Length: 363
Image 1 (spheres, helix red, strand yellow):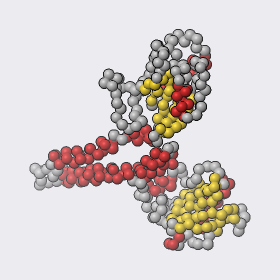
Image 2: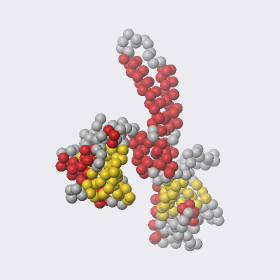
Image 3: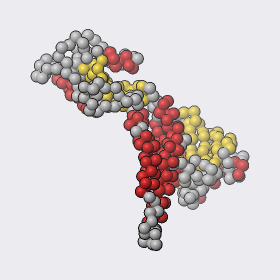
Image 4: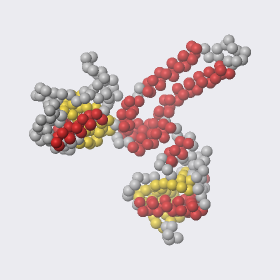
């Protein structure tokens, strides 16, 4: 179903760059573009679909003058991303030029009596979904692809955008729809002449459910891995003062981010940095050393604040790396957190370990 109005927006990130794109989508997109640009070819001609033309951006304050050169591409409905007529104007990425082009589009639409407005965040993809160009999983994949922090995240999002998840769900959906149709047919005959006949025998219903349940359970089993890949994990490095936390922190980052000295208690605050581990975005947190004395004797006010922040970081972390000094005799482990697997493989645990918690130790 065509959209009732035309939307316009700058589709490239804020800031300056070599190229900036203004996008128009809706029933009046092609007409509106003709008033914004000086073109040698009409965008409404069938041959203009999916073709790129050279054009000039008109200066709204000086009729006949131009602001910039650009490339314009038109996509005719319904063969466009949104399912509506869609125009993409690629000019130089100056905020001044792009904002002037966008304001001119809105002002021209108002002057001509066209229903033109500023697009809402994500509205182009919303229109693609409502037009049936993409399904909900693909719409979510658009966001994931844009927000990807690692190449592995981008690959997974691209597969989902291409319909990988939809294809896995489709057979189960078809089987369930078929079962629903059979059950509804049974309900139609319930009060008729076939009261003593089971349209769908219970064994057939159970077989249908069993066939659908197995692939859906396998898909559900990948949820934790998918969430981890999508959202990343927070890993806190904890331990006593001078146990080597900041040294490990620097080694994992492959640069000297934290100050390391022989003096115990050098780190007084939490330090956070991001890195990628096998394609998974990691937020690595270095923390102040945890004292084992219960009285806090010899701990100054700054270190007390640092220890308090360490406990906060441990409470929020998905995984704790507890660094142990093999020469120390009084070692208190930090509070364990629920287990999280960064590899997607089943964790290997000793039978005597507590199965409700995870501790990782480095000597």
